[in-house]
Structures are given as C-alpha cells and as structure tokens.
View (cartoon, rainbow, N blue to C red):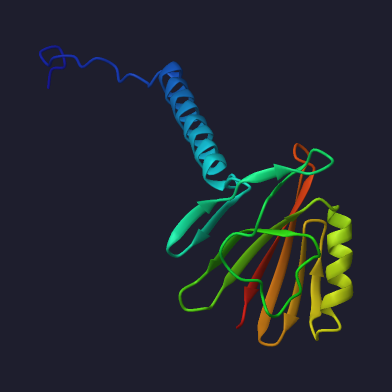
Length: 174
C-alpha cells in the first residue's frame, strides 16, 4: 500500500492549558458568588426580629415603649400571653414576646429588664435548683435545666444601644 495516495490527517491537538485554566477560574468565581449569596440569605433570615414584637398563633403585636429614668426604653406593659408556671419571672421585667405551639409541646416567652445579664443569670441560678430543676449546661449566653421529662433553656441577650437585657425562656414539657 502506498501512503502517498492517502490523505494526511492533521496531528492530534493537545488541549491548551489556557482553556482548562479558564474553566477552573469560572468555576471558582461561580462557587464564591454562590457562597456570598448564601451567606447573605442566611444573615438576613437569622437576624432577630424587632425587640418588641410578639407572635401568637393568631396575632402579631408591637408594644409601645417608654423611656425610663436612665433613658432606657422598656415596653410600657406586657404583651398578650402568660408567664411560665414552671419558672419564676425575673422581678421588674416586661414580657415582650410570647408564643406557644398549638399542641402545647413548646412555649417561648421573652422578657426585657434594665438589669444586667449577670443579675438575671444569678437570679435563675438561685431559683431553679430549689424548684427541682437540675442545671445541665451553663454558658455565657445560655443556661439549660432539666426536670424529667421537661427541659428549660434560658437565652440572654444584651442591647448596648438600648442598655436593656433581654432573656428568653424556652420550655418543653417533654
């Protein structure tokens, strides 16, 4: 056979290194953009609601605030709802949020006070043990108690802007 009469095929081309590098950069940029967008969405969705908003299964209300002698603004009265029967309420605090699952499996009550987080934490440390609760966890922003089969978590927040401590009782009877 004569190789002269057969058409010659061009040599096989190797993929250029520049093309694959460009693809990698596009992937990196797309992944970074998705991470940034995801982070922004998470930030917006995880921000706390207004300090004086209450949510019950049937309504949302906002309480008016009135300045105290020190210029701090506390709501003038409790929102609709109830204090927990299983835990005392910190003295001179105002209920600002209340929600309870329709089946009674979870209740969340939030209060505000002009006292410090440390004072509120100390109060609950002194009161919960004599009521039969056992502390299962204590951290800077949270305390957890258990009284089989019930559980109670208390979360603490401090607003530097308003100089107000907000604490939230999260109760589950089972």
